[in-house]
Amino acid sequence: MISAPNEPAAPLDALAALWRAAELPAEALGSIDLPGTGPVVPSSFPVAIAAQASLAAAALAAVEIDLRRGGVGGARDRVTVDRRHAALEARGWFSLDGRVPEPWDPLSGLYPCGDDGAGGWVRIHANFAHHRDGALRLLGLPPGPGTPRDAVTRALREHDALAFEDAAANAGLVVAAARTFDAWDAHPQGRALAAAPTRRRA
Image 1 (spheres, one colour):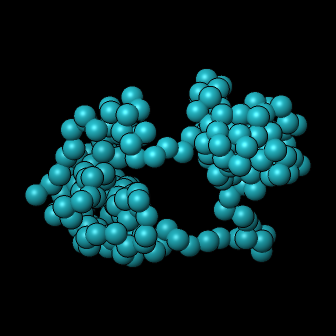
Image 2 (cartoon, helix red, strand yellow):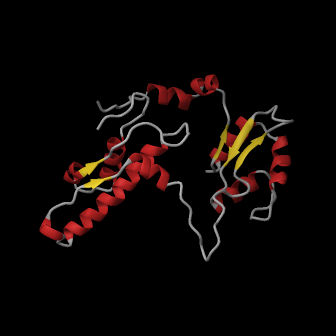
Image 3 (cartoon, helix red, strand yellow):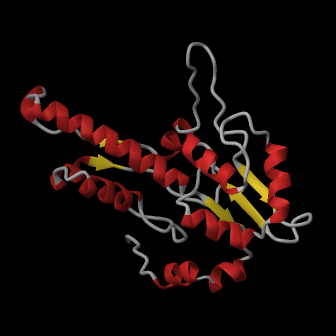
């Protein structure tokens, strides 16, 4: 398997990490083909690799179940998961009782802090109710789906982005302050990531 030069990891690396974490038989990894290279959808994250590796893990797990049930011929089937197909499949949608649910909570997203963003910007993750309600409590707002987005915007005028990020982290919440590239490079987590070894498959 060959990864593109700018990819942080080959899809086989990502799949192997998932497979090992699930403590599944290593020999199954010899039965997978992961064709395709490069990004499929515009993103700063390797979403195509994530989609390909996760679908490959599910397919390989199905093969293992079939093998343990005495599948045809008692041999492990070979699996192919194409990168483009996997990434595009992950863009699908579903409905519940004929209704397509919103992919994002109305309160999730980017907000200015201080006066018109003078205190920086934060991104609040509110897709899980306990994250949403925790952020609302931290802002002194009533928890629950009834609190409008503009109330969050008004409340954040009294906060600095970095201080709010710290307070949220201390409360176990998912809030991230937006940073310039230079500010991220100077941050302890940015420095730790920059120093971490990168693995590439050739």
